[in-house]
Length: 119
Ligand code: FES
Image (cartoon, rainbow, N blue to C red; front, side, top):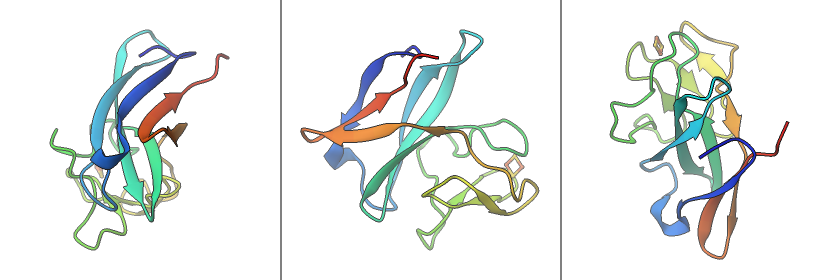
């Protein structure tokens, strides 16, 4: 999925509140694929580049499990950094104060879409 395009990510029903994220890829600024996640929190959908701000590895273990047990935070599986699901800000861990790169997702007609505007 290239920058400047709109793309279907998944059905809305695939994203359960504080449940498993849907993994997808975007094309990064260098033209290479970048892993990304779509998730639902308190009824709204959010999207982030799936790269921890401590070390740029994927938050999950390729299984979409990004929420901690409380369902209130996204957790990095490597060193346990905690991120707020609604803005991607790290509130605990080695990258505290930094933020995940947010992606513009929206819901329409029972589907979740990515909309990246051209530069
Ligand atoms: S790599 Fe995510 S907290 Fe260290």
